[in-house]
Image 1 (cartoon, one colour):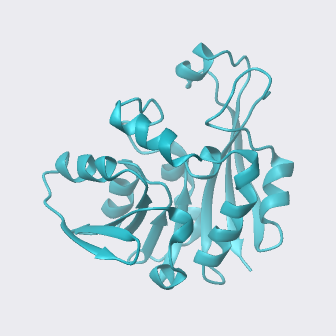
Image 2 (cartoon, helix red, strand yellow):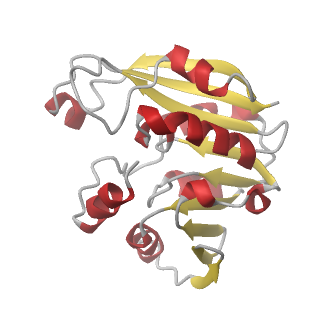
Length: 218
């Protein structure tokens, strides 16, 4: 995940990865994680995701990490909220209502920030990482997730010869390779995701698998 690439995407509003509604995997599988209703939830590389609104509407407070300040500004502006912003270490933290969005490099986040979380939702973070960064991301997720806390992870798998990421392909074997040391892993759902991904079809994909995983920190 090159910082300049993502900042440029937000600056140019090239955000085809943004979804106008909450992800249906979140709606369908979140309850299976058993996250306490009032618990804090971490959303890595959150953008201006409507998943955060869904989580807040279901009683959670949300800690989001995001590289682009413009994404955070848009999230609050679209909800007519004026956040209070403070500098904390290498981050700028914008807070309003149930949301605390940390602008900066997710990999630099202090685990003290997430020591009270009850769950994690990763729809767009792991798949944004090229192969060379995926283990670093997985290790950071383990460091940020307290023992016993569950993660709902969304992954995609496709033939990498058909398209350059992001999003990057993560096979089931790769999920196990990345996370099995620190997490117990359960596949919750696997489906054909191509028909719902017109922009990826336009980029050359002829097949796409989308998977929902439950990871529980050991």
